[in-house]
Image 1 (spheres, rainbow, N blue to C red):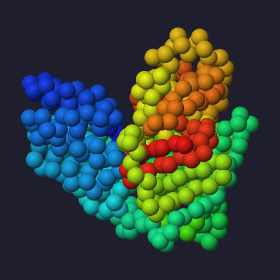
Image 2 (image 1 turned 90 degrees about the vertical axis):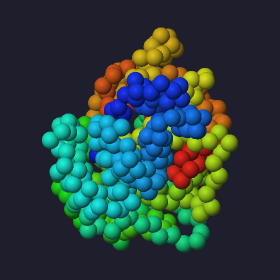
Image 3 (image 1 turned 90 degrees about the horizontal axis):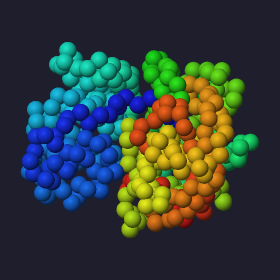
Image 4 (image 1 turned 120 degrees about the horizontal axis):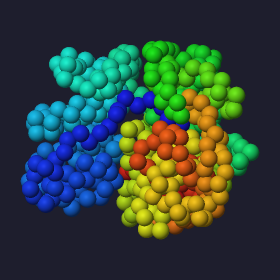
Length: 430
Protein backbone atom coordinates (compact mmCIF):
# COMPACT_ATOMS: atom_id res chain seq x y z
CA UNK A 1 0.00 0.00 0.00
CA UNK A 2 1.59 3.28 -1.09
CA UNK A 3 0.77 6.62 0.47
CA UNK A 4 1.49 10.14 -0.74
CA UNK A 5 5.09 11.24 -0.20
CA UNK A 6 6.17 14.86 -0.46
CA UNK A 7 9.63 13.94 -1.71
CA UNK A 8 10.34 13.90 -5.43
CA UNK A 9 13.96 12.85 -5.28
CA UNK A 10 16.52 13.46 -7.98
CA UNK A 11 20.28 13.70 -7.97
CA UNK A 12 20.26 17.06 -9.65
CA UNK A 13 23.94 18.00 -9.74
CA UNK A 14 26.49 16.47 -12.09
CA UNK A 15 29.71 16.35 -10.15
CA UNK A 16 31.92 14.21 -12.31
CA UNK A 17 32.81 17.10 -14.60
CA UNK A 18 34.01 19.16 -11.64
CA UNK A 19 36.57 16.89 -10.04
CA UNK A 20 39.68 15.22 -11.32
CA UNK A 21 40.52 12.89 -8.43
CA UNK A 22 39.55 9.28 -9.08
CA UNK A 23 37.76 8.78 -5.74
CA UNK A 24 35.72 11.94 -6.28
CA UNK A 25 34.85 10.91 -9.82
CA UNK A 26 33.79 7.45 -8.73
CA UNK A 27 31.59 8.79 -5.96
CA UNK A 28 30.13 11.41 -8.32
CA UNK A 29 29.20 8.68 -10.80
CA UNK A 30 27.43 6.73 -8.04
CA UNK A 31 25.58 9.85 -6.87
CA UNK A 32 24.44 10.61 -10.39
CA UNK A 33 23.26 7.02 -10.88
CA UNK A 34 20.87 7.38 -7.92
CA UNK A 35 21.93 3.93 -6.64
CA UNK A 36 21.82 4.38 -2.85
CA UNK A 37 22.75 0.76 -2.22
CA UNK A 38 25.93 1.13 -4.21
CA UNK A 39 26.55 4.40 -2.39
CA UNK A 40 26.18 2.62 0.97
CA UNK A 41 28.56 -0.14 -0.18
CA UNK A 42 31.27 2.04 -1.72
CA UNK A 43 31.37 5.10 0.51
CA UNK A 44 33.38 3.49 3.37
CA UNK A 45 36.18 2.70 0.86
CA UNK A 46 36.09 6.17 -0.72
CA UNK A 47 35.39 8.57 2.16
CA UNK A 48 38.99 9.09 3.30
CA UNK A 49 40.24 9.58 -0.27
CA UNK A 50 37.87 12.37 -1.26
CA UNK A 51 39.35 15.79 -1.97
CA UNK A 52 36.10 17.75 -1.71
CA UNK A 53 34.36 17.77 1.71
CA UNK A 54 31.04 18.64 0.08
CA UNK A 55 30.86 15.11 -1.35
CA UNK A 56 31.34 13.63 2.13
CA UNK A 57 28.55 15.69 3.64
CA UNK A 58 26.19 15.13 0.71
CA UNK A 59 26.75 11.37 0.83
CA UNK A 60 26.35 11.17 4.60
CA UNK A 61 23.17 13.26 4.36
CA UNK A 62 21.66 10.89 1.81
CA UNK A 63 22.67 7.73 3.69
CA UNK A 64 21.41 9.05 7.04
CA UNK A 65 18.06 9.86 5.45
CA UNK A 66 17.85 6.44 3.78
CA UNK A 67 18.89 4.64 6.99
CA UNK A 68 16.07 5.98 9.18
CA UNK A 69 18.24 8.41 11.15
CA UNK A 70 16.19 11.62 11.03
CA UNK A 71 18.17 13.62 13.61
CA UNK A 72 21.48 12.77 11.97
CA UNK A 73 20.07 13.46 8.50
CA UNK A 74 18.74 16.84 9.61
CA UNK A 75 22.12 17.83 11.07
CA UNK A 76 24.08 16.65 8.03
CA UNK A 77 21.79 18.45 5.58
CA UNK A 78 22.00 21.64 7.64
CA UNK A 79 25.78 21.43 7.42
CA UNK A 80 25.57 20.81 3.67
CA UNK A 81 23.30 23.79 3.07
CA UNK A 82 25.19 26.09 5.42
CA UNK A 83 28.71 25.38 4.17
CA UNK A 84 28.37 24.05 0.62
CA UNK A 85 25.13 25.31 -0.89
CA UNK A 86 26.85 27.17 -3.72
CA UNK A 87 29.10 24.22 -4.49
CA UNK A 88 26.22 21.73 -4.47
CA UNK A 89 24.13 23.91 -6.78
CA UNK A 90 20.61 25.23 -6.47
CA UNK A 91 18.87 22.12 -7.85
CA UNK A 92 20.50 19.90 -5.24
CA UNK A 93 19.96 22.49 -2.50
CA UNK A 94 16.20 22.69 -3.10
CA UNK A 95 15.96 18.89 -3.08
CA UNK A 96 17.96 18.52 0.12
CA UNK A 97 16.05 21.31 1.86
CA UNK A 98 12.85 19.37 1.30
CA UNK A 99 14.52 16.23 2.65
CA UNK A 100 15.64 18.19 5.71
CA UNK A 101 12.10 19.31 6.46
CA UNK A 102 10.76 15.80 5.93
CA UNK A 103 13.18 14.60 8.62
CA UNK A 104 12.02 17.38 10.94
CA UNK A 105 8.46 16.13 10.45
CA UNK A 106 9.62 12.56 11.12
CA UNK A 107 10.78 13.78 14.54
CA UNK A 108 7.40 15.41 15.15
CA UNK A 109 8.73 18.95 14.66
CA UNK A 110 5.91 19.89 12.32
CA UNK A 111 5.81 23.61 13.09
CA UNK A 112 9.54 24.03 12.49
CA UNK A 113 9.29 22.09 9.22
CA UNK A 114 6.39 24.28 8.04
CA UNK A 115 8.11 27.52 9.05
CA UNK A 116 11.38 26.61 7.34
CA UNK A 117 9.57 25.62 4.16
CA UNK A 118 7.62 28.88 4.17
CA UNK A 119 10.83 30.88 4.63
CA UNK A 120 12.63 29.02 1.85
CA UNK A 121 9.76 29.47 -0.60
CA UNK A 122 9.56 33.15 0.26
CA UNK A 123 13.23 33.56 -0.57
CA UNK A 124 13.63 31.51 -3.74
CA UNK A 125 10.24 30.43 -5.11
CA UNK A 126 10.67 32.59 -8.21
CA UNK A 127 13.70 30.46 -9.14
CA UNK A 128 12.15 27.05 -8.45
CA UNK A 129 10.93 24.56 -10.99
CA UNK A 130 7.12 24.35 -10.90
CA UNK A 131 7.20 20.65 -9.95
CA UNK A 132 9.45 21.34 -6.96
CA UNK A 133 7.43 24.36 -5.95
CA UNK A 134 4.22 22.33 -5.91
CA UNK A 135 5.93 19.65 -3.78
CA UNK A 136 7.06 22.38 -1.37
CA UNK A 137 3.54 23.80 -1.16
CA UNK A 138 2.03 20.37 -0.53
CA UNK A 139 4.57 19.68 2.21
CA UNK A 140 4.01 23.08 3.80
CA UNK A 141 0.23 22.66 3.90
CA UNK A 142 0.54 19.21 5.44
CA UNK A 143 3.10 20.15 8.11
CA UNK A 144 1.34 23.40 8.92
CA UNK A 145 -1.90 21.52 9.57
CA UNK A 146 0.00 19.41 12.14
CA UNK A 147 1.86 22.28 13.84
CA UNK A 148 -0.07 21.94 17.11
CA UNK A 149 0.08 18.12 17.10
CA UNK A 150 2.56 16.51 19.54
CA UNK A 151 5.14 14.13 18.11
CA UNK A 152 4.19 10.47 17.77
CA UNK A 153 5.25 8.51 20.86
CA UNK A 154 5.47 4.81 21.65
CA UNK A 155 4.86 3.79 25.27
CA UNK A 156 5.70 0.21 26.20
CA UNK A 157 6.50 -1.82 29.32
CA UNK A 158 9.92 -3.38 29.91
CA UNK A 159 9.01 -6.62 28.18
CA UNK A 160 8.48 -7.92 24.68
CA UNK A 161 5.23 -7.22 22.90
CA UNK A 162 3.77 -10.45 21.50
CA UNK A 163 0.65 -10.41 19.35
CA UNK A 164 -1.19 -12.90 17.18
CA UNK A 165 -2.19 -11.97 13.65
CA UNK A 166 -4.74 -13.27 11.19
CA UNK A 167 -3.87 -14.09 7.58
CA UNK A 168 -6.76 -13.56 5.18
CA UNK A 169 -6.17 -15.88 2.21
CA UNK A 170 -7.58 -15.00 -1.22
CA UNK A 171 -8.71 -17.25 -4.05
CA UNK A 172 -5.29 -17.00 -5.72
CA UNK A 173 -3.55 -18.22 -2.56
CA UNK A 174 -2.12 -14.81 -1.64
CA UNK A 175 -2.76 -13.34 1.79
CA UNK A 176 -2.71 -10.20 3.91
CA UNK A 177 -1.59 -9.93 7.52
CA UNK A 178 -4.07 -8.37 9.98
CA UNK A 179 -3.07 -7.32 13.49
CA UNK A 180 -5.43 -6.44 16.38
CA UNK A 181 -5.44 -2.73 17.19
CA UNK A 182 -7.57 -0.99 19.81
CA UNK A 183 -8.79 2.40 18.59
CA UNK A 184 -11.45 4.60 20.18
CA UNK A 185 -12.09 1.86 22.73
CA UNK A 186 -12.79 -0.82 20.09
CA UNK A 187 -10.59 -3.63 18.83
CA UNK A 188 -10.24 -3.66 15.04
CA UNK A 189 -8.15 -5.42 12.42
CA UNK A 190 -5.42 -3.43 10.66
CA UNK A 191 -3.30 -4.64 7.75
CA UNK A 192 0.34 -4.51 8.86
CA UNK A 193 2.10 -2.77 5.98
CA UNK A 194 5.80 -1.99 5.74
CA UNK A 195 5.04 -0.22 2.46
CA UNK A 196 2.71 2.35 4.04
CA UNK A 197 4.58 5.55 5.01
CA UNK A 198 3.31 7.40 8.06
CA UNK A 199 1.17 6.23 10.91
CA UNK A 200 -1.90 4.67 9.30
CA UNK A 201 -4.16 4.59 6.26
CA UNK A 202 -7.96 4.45 6.70
CA UNK A 203 -11.14 4.57 4.69
CA UNK A 204 -13.30 7.63 5.27
CA UNK A 205 -16.06 5.45 6.71
CA UNK A 206 -13.69 3.82 9.21
CA UNK A 207 -12.18 7.16 10.23
CA UNK A 208 -15.62 8.66 10.85
CA UNK A 209 -16.73 5.61 12.83
CA UNK A 210 -13.70 5.93 15.12
CA UNK A 211 -13.79 9.73 15.54
CA UNK A 212 -10.49 10.46 13.83
CA UNK A 213 -9.76 14.18 14.11
CA UNK A 214 -9.35 15.78 10.65
CA UNK A 215 -6.62 18.41 10.37
CA UNK A 216 -6.34 18.78 6.58
CA UNK A 217 -8.84 17.90 3.86
CA UNK A 218 -6.91 18.25 0.58
CA UNK A 219 -4.12 15.71 0.94
CA UNK A 220 -2.65 14.37 -2.34
CA UNK A 221 -2.51 10.56 -2.31
CA UNK A 222 -0.80 8.30 -4.81
CA UNK A 223 -1.03 4.54 -5.27
CA UNK A 224 -2.23 2.65 -8.33
CA UNK A 225 -3.90 5.97 -9.15
CA UNK A 226 -3.84 9.52 -7.85
CA UNK A 227 -6.37 11.52 -5.89
CA UNK A 228 -7.02 13.55 -2.78
CA UNK A 229 -7.87 12.47 0.72
CA UNK A 230 -7.69 13.85 4.22
CA UNK A 231 -5.11 13.97 6.97
CA UNK A 232 -6.17 13.03 10.47
CA UNK A 233 -4.77 12.42 13.95
CA UNK A 234 -5.65 9.73 16.49
CA UNK A 235 -4.77 10.49 20.11
CA UNK A 236 -3.72 6.89 20.82
CA UNK A 237 -4.03 3.29 19.70
CA UNK A 238 -3.08 0.10 21.53
CA UNK A 239 -1.21 -2.85 20.02
CA UNK A 240 -0.59 -5.68 22.46
CA UNK A 241 1.03 -4.12 25.52
CA UNK A 242 2.14 -1.00 23.60
CA UNK A 243 0.39 2.36 23.28
CA UNK A 244 1.17 4.58 20.29
CA UNK A 245 0.19 8.21 20.72
CA UNK A 246 -0.54 11.03 18.25
CA UNK A 247 -0.86 8.73 15.26
CA UNK A 248 -1.04 10.53 11.90
CA UNK A 249 -3.58 9.06 9.48
CA UNK A 250 -4.11 9.33 5.73
CA UNK A 251 -7.83 9.01 4.98
CA UNK A 252 -8.97 7.80 1.56
CA UNK A 253 -12.30 8.82 0.10
CA UNK A 254 -14.63 6.09 -1.21
CA UNK A 255 -13.63 4.51 -4.52
CA UNK A 256 -16.13 2.08 -6.01
CA UNK A 257 -13.61 0.61 -8.48
CA UNK A 258 -11.48 -0.85 -5.70
CA UNK A 259 -14.00 -1.06 -2.84
CA UNK A 260 -16.19 -3.52 -4.74
CA UNK A 261 -13.19 -5.84 -5.20
CA UNK A 262 -11.67 -5.59 -1.72
CA UNK A 263 -12.55 -3.08 0.97
CA UNK A 264 -9.49 -1.80 2.83
CA UNK A 265 -10.57 -0.07 6.02
CA UNK A 266 -7.43 0.26 8.13
CA UNK A 267 -3.70 -0.11 7.52
CA UNK A 268 -1.00 0.22 10.18
CA UNK A 269 2.03 1.91 8.63
CA UNK A 270 5.73 2.28 9.23
CA UNK A 271 5.74 4.76 12.11
CA UNK A 272 4.91 2.21 14.81
CA UNK A 273 7.49 -0.21 13.41
CA UNK A 274 10.15 2.49 13.30
CA UNK A 275 9.33 3.52 16.87
CA UNK A 276 9.56 -0.10 18.08
CA UNK A 277 12.81 -0.55 16.17
CA UNK A 278 12.31 -4.21 15.29
CA UNK A 279 9.66 -6.81 14.67
CA UNK A 280 9.92 -10.57 14.21
CA UNK A 281 7.25 -12.38 12.20
CA UNK A 282 6.59 -16.11 12.72
CA UNK A 283 4.26 -17.13 9.85
CA UNK A 284 3.70 -20.72 10.99
CA UNK A 285 2.57 -19.54 14.43
CA UNK A 286 0.79 -16.43 13.11
CA UNK A 287 2.74 -14.46 15.70
CA UNK A 288 4.63 -11.15 15.77
CA UNK A 289 7.11 -10.11 18.44
CA UNK A 290 8.31 -6.55 18.99
CA UNK A 291 11.40 -7.37 21.10
CA UNK A 292 13.00 -5.12 23.67
CA UNK A 293 16.45 -6.63 23.07
CA UNK A 294 17.32 -5.88 19.46
CA UNK A 295 18.94 -8.37 17.09
CA UNK A 296 22.58 -7.56 16.22
CA UNK A 297 23.44 -6.66 12.64
CA UNK A 298 24.11 -9.95 10.81
CA UNK A 299 27.53 -10.61 9.22
CA UNK A 300 26.05 -9.85 5.78
CA UNK A 301 25.39 -6.29 6.99
CA UNK A 302 22.71 -3.74 6.19
CA UNK A 303 20.43 -4.70 3.28
CA UNK A 304 17.50 -2.28 3.61
CA UNK A 305 17.21 1.43 2.75
CA UNK A 306 14.35 3.90 2.58
CA UNK A 307 13.89 5.59 -0.79
CA UNK A 308 11.08 8.15 -1.00
CA UNK A 309 9.67 6.82 2.27
CA UNK A 310 9.50 3.22 1.05
CA UNK A 311 11.74 0.35 2.23
CA UNK A 312 13.82 -1.46 -0.37
CA UNK A 313 15.88 -4.63 0.01
CA UNK A 314 19.17 -5.56 -1.59
CA UNK A 315 18.78 -9.13 -2.82
CA UNK A 316 20.58 -11.45 -5.22
CA UNK A 317 19.38 -13.85 -7.91
CA UNK A 318 22.08 -16.06 -9.43
CA UNK A 319 24.67 -13.49 -8.25
CA UNK A 320 22.80 -10.61 -9.90
CA UNK A 321 21.97 -7.84 -7.46
CA UNK A 322 18.28 -6.93 -7.48
CA UNK A 323 16.62 -4.11 -5.54
CA UNK A 324 13.14 -5.08 -4.35
CA UNK A 325 10.38 -3.00 -2.78
CA UNK A 326 9.64 -4.57 0.64
CA UNK A 327 5.88 -4.34 1.05
CA UNK A 328 3.89 -6.54 3.44
CA UNK A 329 0.77 -4.71 2.22
CA UNK A 330 1.30 -6.50 -1.11
CA UNK A 331 -0.67 -9.75 -0.86
CA UNK A 332 1.74 -11.53 -3.20
CA UNK A 333 4.83 -10.14 -4.85
CA UNK A 334 6.12 -9.75 -8.38
CA UNK A 335 8.90 -8.78 -10.72
CA UNK A 336 8.50 -5.45 -12.46
CA UNK A 337 8.95 -4.32 -16.04
CA UNK A 338 12.56 -3.35 -15.27
CA UNK A 339 13.37 -7.01 -14.66
CA UNK A 340 11.38 -8.16 -17.69
CA UNK A 341 13.13 -5.66 -19.95
CA UNK A 342 16.56 -6.92 -18.84
CA UNK A 343 15.62 -10.63 -18.99
CA UNK A 344 13.04 -10.75 -21.76
CA UNK A 345 14.23 -13.92 -23.51
CA UNK A 346 14.60 -15.84 -20.26
CA UNK A 347 11.17 -14.77 -18.98
CA UNK A 348 9.37 -15.56 -22.23
CA UNK A 349 11.11 -18.91 -22.64
CA UNK A 350 10.51 -20.16 -19.09
CA UNK A 351 7.33 -18.35 -18.08
CA UNK A 352 3.65 -18.76 -18.96
CA UNK A 353 1.62 -15.82 -20.28
CA UNK A 354 -1.65 -14.99 -18.49
CA UNK A 355 -3.72 -12.07 -17.22
CA UNK A 356 -3.72 -10.69 -13.70
CA UNK A 357 -5.97 -8.29 -11.80
CA UNK A 358 -4.41 -6.01 -9.26
CA UNK A 359 -5.67 -3.12 -7.17
CA UNK A 360 -4.67 -0.47 -4.70
CA UNK A 361 -5.47 3.11 -3.90
CA UNK A 362 -6.99 4.63 -7.05
CA UNK A 363 -8.45 1.64 -8.83
CA UNK A 364 -8.19 -1.86 -10.24
CA UNK A 365 -6.40 -2.89 -13.44
CA UNK A 366 -6.17 -6.09 -15.46
CA UNK A 367 -2.83 -6.65 -17.17
CA UNK A 368 -0.94 -9.26 -19.16
CA UNK A 369 1.93 -10.92 -17.32
CA UNK A 370 4.30 -13.85 -17.52
CA UNK A 371 4.41 -16.22 -14.57
CA UNK A 372 7.73 -17.88 -13.71
CA UNK A 373 7.34 -21.35 -12.16
CA UNK A 374 10.26 -20.63 -9.84
CA UNK A 375 12.67 -17.80 -9.11
CA UNK A 376 15.93 -18.13 -7.08
CA UNK A 377 16.66 -15.36 -4.59
CA UNK A 378 19.01 -14.63 -1.71
CA UNK A 379 18.32 -12.27 1.21
CA UNK A 380 21.25 -11.86 3.58
CA UNK A 381 22.90 -15.28 3.65
CA UNK A 382 19.68 -17.23 2.95
CA UNK A 383 19.19 -18.82 -0.47
CA UNK A 384 15.62 -19.81 -1.36
CA UNK A 385 13.17 -20.31 -4.22
CA UNK A 386 10.01 -18.28 -4.82
CA UNK A 387 7.37 -20.14 -6.82
CA UNK A 388 4.79 -18.93 -9.33
CA UNK A 389 6.22 -15.40 -9.56
CA UNK A 390 4.34 -12.87 -11.75
CA UNK A 391 6.44 -10.74 -14.11
CA UNK A 392 4.84 -7.50 -15.28
CA UNK A 393 5.45 -6.68 -18.92
CA UNK A 394 3.78 -3.25 -19.02
CA UNK A 395 6.23 -0.40 -18.29
CA UNK A 396 3.51 1.86 -16.85
CA UNK A 397 1.32 -0.60 -14.95
CA UNK A 398 2.00 1.13 -11.61
CA UNK A 399 4.00 3.91 -10.03
CA UNK A 400 7.44 2.33 -9.88
CA UNK A 401 11.00 3.44 -9.56
CA UNK A 402 14.10 1.56 -10.64
CA UNK A 403 13.45 -1.51 -8.52
CA UNK A 404 13.35 -4.99 -10.02
CA UNK A 405 10.19 -6.03 -8.21
CA UNK A 406 8.31 -6.26 -4.93
CA UNK A 407 8.49 -8.74 -2.06
CA UNK A 408 5.15 -9.09 -0.30
CA UNK A 409 3.30 -11.74 1.65
CA UNK A 410 4.29 -14.64 -0.62
CA UNK A 411 7.86 -13.85 0.46
CA UNK A 412 6.94 -13.52 4.14
CA UNK A 413 5.03 -16.81 4.20
CA UNK A 414 8.03 -18.71 2.79
CA UNK A 415 9.93 -18.72 6.09
CA UNK A 416 9.71 -19.76 9.73
CA UNK A 417 10.93 -16.38 10.97
CA UNK A 418 11.51 -12.95 9.44
CA UNK A 419 13.39 -10.29 11.39
CA UNK A 420 12.79 -6.71 10.24
CA UNK A 421 15.07 -4.16 11.89
CA UNK A 422 14.33 -0.48 11.35
CA UNK A 423 17.07 0.38 13.86
CA UNK A 424 19.90 -1.35 11.99
CA UNK A 425 18.13 -1.45 8.62
CA UNK A 426 18.19 -5.12 7.71
CA UNK A 427 15.84 -7.99 6.96
CA UNK A 428 16.94 -11.51 7.90
CA UNK A 429 15.06 -14.73 7.17
CA UNK A 430 15.23 -18.22 8.62
